[in-house]
Length: 268
Image 1 (cartoon, rainbow, N blue to C red):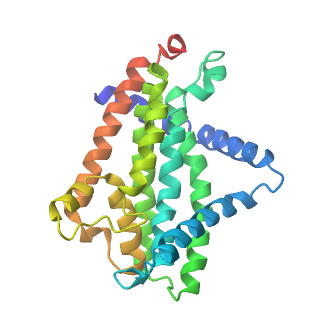
Image 2: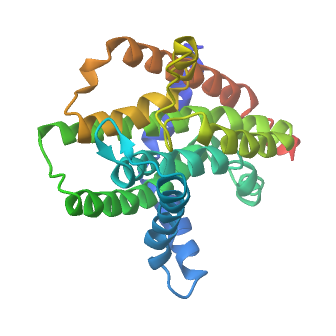
């Protein structure tokens, strides 16, 4: 177990520059495929948020939650989701999409999930810029608690990186894994407090069940930092639980990567 974790961590830390180069190349390649380039990195999340606001905020007449207007409330939650969702769905094919590389040269395969997470972090920064502009327009201004966003962004990175290590290997073994993950992510959007508080007043037990979703911790953390001036230390039990989940996923993903590192080509 410790040998596999050390192997993955060593490969990733010793190839940090390569990870950033691959992520930058893929990001620029995506921009070159469209005429407006970086415009869509801002337009896509903005259109998505406006759609949710029209459907849930205006169509279903939701005024907001806990004294926060619905639009800034959903923008902050969606900022976290806009990073988590693509990292998980694209992380499944992190290795499979690079079969032309790993079959022709010796390549540190375990860094591929990290390249996806780093690439999508740029889109996350674009979404954060949209979020900050919207918050300023609604009268929310930075304070010391907004620094917690750095911590929660790191939490999001560790979660998706650990999960991508697992799913990228499983996808090489069974191609249906990615289709399953994409389908589950559609459901997870509504099982996370992105568009609603994910709380059941009449069924408190269900609220505790919803909190078992590690995405709950990240999305709630973003909102606590901005709207309610709460530090991550305000939820010690949830913090401990979240990092236990991440560590377990990291152990499983590292073990799979280490065990199948010489067998990836045979899985193609």
